[in-house]
Length: 376
Image (cartoon, rainbow, N blue to C red; front, side, top):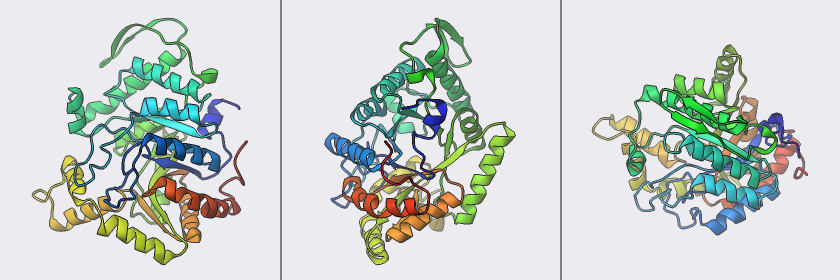
């Protein structure tokens, strides 16, 4: 298989709408629900799901870097596999699918990260991809004894971090790195990446500084499309692509969403109500809001309830709910608005992916957005 940069950026498939699974390494995935069928994230289930997604022709697996759960009744994301080792193992157990590692730049030394990422790349024959995050959760930084940098320093540090990582991947001789934040002597790293081409890279910077970082360094910008009309999504995509072109760069736009697909629209909506409203883990939701600095004592009642409900309904992601025709149409409309791909969540990935595979993927293929069958 070709391991050129272009092939990596395309995730080795001709699919126009890239589809992947998000946060499968974390208990409850991206959802704050107490229903008993919620995702366990056991290792056995991770392996079975990765093999199923690989065989189904999905394009990528995107883990979340999480070190502490959200309390409440379920401690959502409290049981989570570390993503560098997860990426290595899952890559070795699959054959086609692109496997991301999500790395907190401030918490993982660039020498260690570069070596771990190369290990994952070799384990999968060149299918490793990198999602760079700067982090926001003070509780998690406290676990490492690391102080979060001021907001204006986070991306300048991340720039030095990725510059160092990329240099380690390519340098033929030991080098010194003398940055504002990183001071390293006699740095070297072998082996190199498969084919010596850097991996597909993604970032979810939301601020102007974060977007500039993603545009300058990455192939994909991950952005929120929840509660946006398709017209609004198209405007967001247009503005981000224009911003990239002004910096002499091109970038693809990805987002995430909760998929609930059932034989009828009514069944899908009833299950959404059951799992994400009637059985929401409100304790976990309120703790997450608190960590974001959103509390009842500093937010209007209307705003607090709106934020609370938004996090309940898929932890802020877009809700894609309906029968197979409706789900396929929503994904097609998102692609029509300019999205290159969608990282999907399910209440239980293993239980729900087979129906999505059998009913939605063929519809997307008929719309010209997915290749027929599984790529060789």
